[in-house]
Length: 330
Image (cartoon, rainbow, N blue to C red):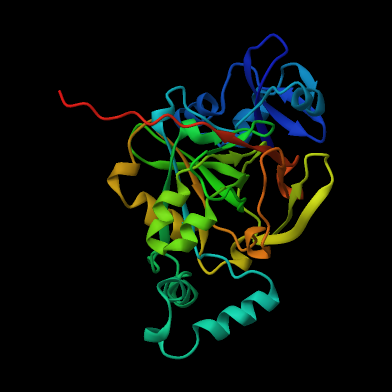
C-alpha cells in the first residue's frame, strides 16, 4: 500500500491511498500522523485502518502534483517535533563496487581510514542474530521537520555551501507512541542531499555537510521493505534533458546492516523516544553524481525513482540567501 499526503483543490489537508494515478482520500483523518496515532490507539495495522477509511473523493495524482499540492508523506504540526537523521557507510553497492570495497577493507585494519574501518565493522557485524545488537553504524543529524521538502518543492542550499549533491536513499518514517514505543509507519524514497565538497575537506566536517534540506516522498510504502530495491537517480538540466543518470540498489540484500540494527542504534537513546514525536531516518546510499565529478547547478533538478515507491521524487536545486545574526549579550 502507498499513502500520500496532499492538499485538496480547496486547500484542505488530506491523506489518501495511491493506486496507479488514482488517489482515494481517507475519511476522518487529515494527516498521516493522525492516522498513525489512531492505528496505535486502536491496536490496528496502518494498512487495515487506511483501507477501511478509504471512502473519500478520488483524485488524479498527476493533477495534484502539477498543481503543487503534494506534501511530504509524514510531518508534525510543530516542525521541532520531527527529527531528521541518518546513517552512512551501510550499502554494498553493485557487484563491482562490492568487490572493490572488499579489496579496500582487506588486510591490516590499522592501515585503513576511519571510513573504511567503519565500513568493515558493518560488513563484519551489521547483521546480528535475531534478538542481538550488532555493531553500531555511522550516525548523523540533519535537522528538524523544517528542512524536509516534498516532491515538487525546491531543494535549497545555503549560499555558503561549496556543493549541493543528491544522495538517493530509503528513509524509515516513525511515530513515537504515548508510552514511548517507536512505531514504524513505513518507508519512503528520499534524497538525503549533502555538501560533499565540505565533507571531503575533512571528515570531521561531516556534521556541517549534513545540515541541509532533504527530499522525502512523495509516497509512503506501508509494510516491510523489500529485501531488494532497485531505482534510478537522475540529474536533469534546466531544459529538462537528462544530464546524468545511474541505477542504485538498496534493501537489506544490498546492505551491510539490517534495518533492525540501524533502528536499534537510533532508538536506543531515550532522547528519541519522546511521545508524539516523528522521526525520518535515512538508511544510506551507494550512488552519487558527485562521485562522477558532477557539480549540480541551481535550476537543475534531482530525480529519484523506484517502482516500489510509486511516483518519482523531484526537487529543483535553488540557492538560499543566508542572514547571519550577530549574537548580542544580555
